[in-house]
Image (cartoon, rainbow, N blue to C red; front, top):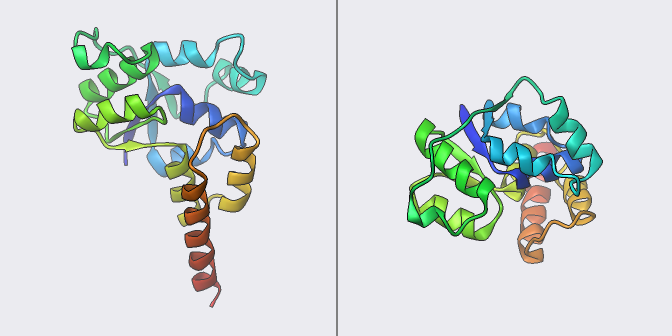
Length: 166
């Protein structure tokens, strides 16, 4: 993938678990609308995440999107709404998002969607992270996830690692 647009969730959790540097290796350029930057910089956001966005890496760009007039987007929070609108207007390769309602709208609009768990799984496939360690750190946050999904991905990861070692 070349260019993706991110909502705040995946960025926040990748920073919290110390895996944010996998993004440019997996995706290339990452765009965020100003609304997402504002969400990441709220006072209630963990200090490490606010420090990260205060000095963003060169691969992250804040880019305003079009005015949102699409009624399908109005029920979403401002960050999700703006991320989807920006992804559509820039013809991004994907949108990075975890929120179920936002994901459903993005998919309905024809966007490819990848969430935090999917990013970590892809990173593990490319040997950029240890999936078990990443999931352990993710479980220590307030991230909501289906336990069965994490267990299934960890089982696949173990098989993949065993095949590599033989």
